[in-house]
Image (cartoon, rainbow, N blue to C red; front, side, top):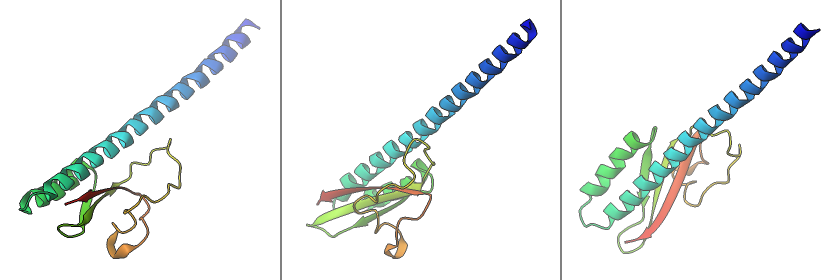
Amino acid sequence: MALLEVALAMALMSMCGLGLLGAQLGLARHALASAARARAAFIADAIAEASLETATAPRDQWKARAAVVVPEGRATVSGTAATASLVALTWADLHDEAAPRTQPSADGCENAQSSGADMARGRACIALAFVQ
């Protein structure tokens, strides 16, 4: 009888351990996805700031850095001088399990894809509007 109780206690402890492990993995995945979103916001802000200069070289440098800072990063700037412009940055989504499966499209992100198609699956987007 004592061995049966020990076996049940061990089974219960192992299930609790697996639950804790799953929670830790989920937190780590969420932290990676949040860090990617924060880096993307930084890049979008830097591109918007660089667009305020008259030269286009700084903006182009930040657009090139987007691919390095976030996975498969692609930055686009729409608009012309003296008007409102939009920086849209897309990157490979890290599949954050804590986030909802179907996220609403963010303003400006639907046009960030080539040919203006809907957001591709597996891609995340951030858009930042600014006035030059």
